[in-house]
Image 1 (tube, rainbow, N blue to C red):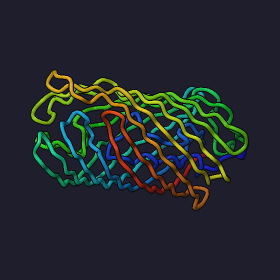
Image 2: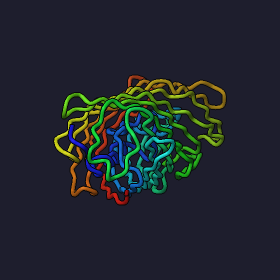
Image 3: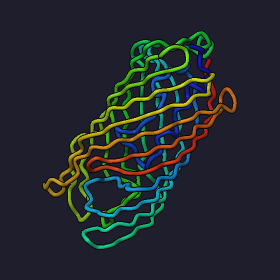
Image 4: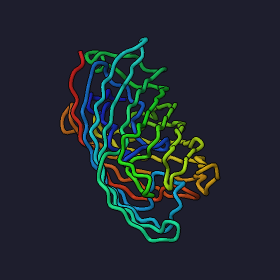
Amino acid sequence: MSSPTVFSAFLVIGVSLVAPTVTAQEIEARAYSNIPIGVSFIGVGYSFSQGDILLDAAVPVAGLDARINAAFARYLHSFSLLGLPWKVSVTLPVASGDWTAFVEDEFRSRDVRGLGDARIAIATIFAGAPALEKSEFAGYRQGRVFGASLDLIMPTGDYDSTYAANLGTNRWTLNPEIGMSQPLGEKWILELALAAGIFGTNDDFYGGNTLRQDPLIALKGDLIRQFRPGLWMAFAIGYGWGGQATVGGLATESLQSNVKAGISFAYPLSRNQGLVFNLASGFTFRAGPDFDTIAVAYQVSWGGS
């Protein structure tokens, strides 16, 4: 398997811009690619999503139609700790949302612009890949690797409890994940992951209620085709279930069972710059989002020994 460039190792952002916030079911290819330590990057991206998109499935709505434009800026830095490669990132989103729906049998609409929920994430490969300087990375060949990540989503988004639709969730969310990446010959990579969304309490939910939600569990898989360093295509799918919510102590019809699927294409502009294009769709068997998304992201990286 050919060794990756710095660009191809970093270009994993932008493929999960489904909504202003993210969940355990987020699908993001190449999440377990090793990268040189001491390298930083900045990325910016944009997405447009349309469909049945509401950040809290417990809101009693019918006939929902949403259009969400989202943009983000992300900073990521890689480092070595305990001999393992690590990545830490911060993501700041802004968005505009236009919702129409029947809420409690009354037709309502909302058009809002503002901040989404910010996110900080840390990830490592704990088996199968060493921490490498940039000068050592040219000789790296990926084998089977195992990794883990922990994302913290913070309640920084625009939120008003008098509305059923918001850009923020007004609660903290923790997304732990564990996964593996396995080369299949010279050109293909298979990634599998198990993740969870662990939700904090929203004490100022719609209608002045308190929202509590059980964890949402997700299984995810990516099949990646590498054409040359930095140029690849990925086919991703994720299935999520759980997330039963209670509002004011009463159970709602919010037990989720839904699928997200997507196709990503990465194109290098240089060894440290590139683009990712993404098409994604979600559909639900029970509660959960039902949507279509198109997204694009650009990034530039620098640094390393």
